[in-house]
Length: 347
Image (cartoon, helix red, strand yellow):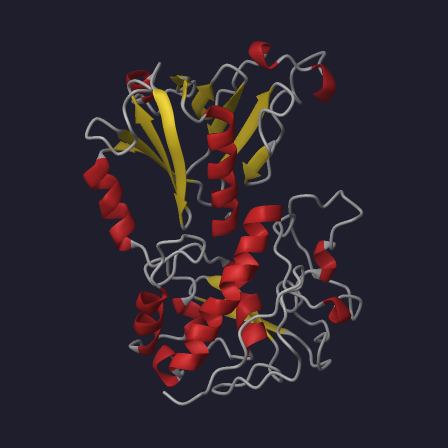
């Protein structure tokens, strides 16, 4: 399932490709009949809130997004959803986002990537929604949710979500207070979209390692400084992810130590894996998919276990139950700035 930073990248790609343009909308699969009602409308905006994408459509470019007539297409990709793009050179900043997918045009008979005329591409039968503009198109397949909402419906969804670290309007106090009031394990709370929006299994595992916290410690046993530190660490990590399409949590000095991960699927593939200049995924994580391998910091065997229907990964030596006393400086792995210094552990 895509984590929150990829949905923000998706919103940016849709704004760049279709923003303020009159578009054609259709549902080749036939399961999103509302697409016909929006055909010929203007895509006024695209925004991400956690793992939810909202596409704002207005009947005319003279109407501002947010006006009473605005209709919002809410999309949640879930485990199997994806968007794929095709168009003129420079049309979209990405070619695909979501579950493992085939690029648009790759299965067109007699065509290869360089020769595809996007205007001639026939949508696959599984395409839930196609958006086509003057310079290109985007196809949505396999989403968990795809529905049309009015302003009240959009707000109702947002009100159910916790704060999103990538949004300027996020209130981190809601996250901190919710964690401190809960008896639930912090490893479960971080995956609860009602507590914090956009966090997935990779960010959960990695930020807890960086905070030196055992995933099983109850939220109420943490101090305010510890929980605020988790938020402060997530913001630059996710901003980097939104900018590059990659999750990288390791410090440069640790990347070549036990540079391995245990992969049983393509689940950890990231944007730009084929680029030799990026940090490869086997060097990008401290604990995620590194079960049975030595910890990069202390050489203890990384463990994994089921937690709330997902696999959690942690180092039993580095991640103590209640304390957070890192022995190395937590500086963002791909940026020159340092994160805030360690806070007092007093409430």
